[in-house]
Length: 198
Image (cartoon, rainbow, N blue to C red; front, side):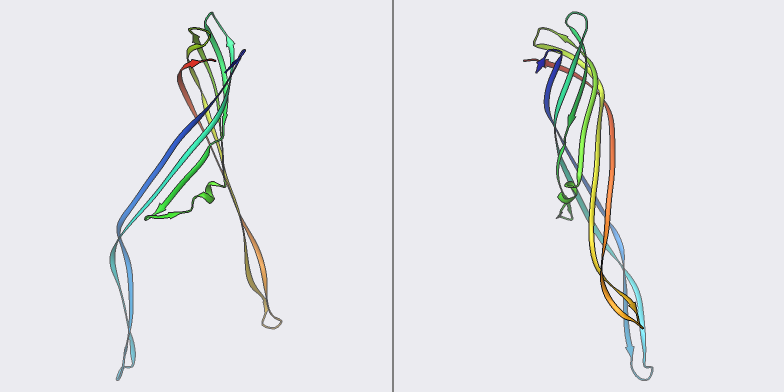
């Protein structure tokens, strides 16, 4: 939508990411046995050994990323029918996913709930206008994604304190674990556009 020298637009990006990891081979299983020998030796015989057993594991994961965005373009003007511009946009990706290990589904939503992602885009470009409503153009810029993962857990356990002289008592102790991870990704882009302004 064109508002004088400003152009407002919105959109929705979608990305599907999936991964499968399969591992197989053989592994050592240790064996152990004891046998008691009666008279006249009265002793134990210990036997150690191993077996080679095959194993096979399959891990699968997939993510669906929906990123609604809003963009603002500032037309800078230029020769007749040509306009240079600056553009900026912001998006808030929404992520859903699932994972499984050997066919057993795992809970990944608890991790996704602790994940915060924002996307930003800045670019420069130019357009050639066929009419007041139609144009074609090109654009170059950078996309930047800021990702933060934050998780905090509180645990309680009972510990015994004291000494054999004074006696022992149980106390409840609270421990906390906090994880904060950050990932920033910047990638350049170039696009060709065909635009309709209404």
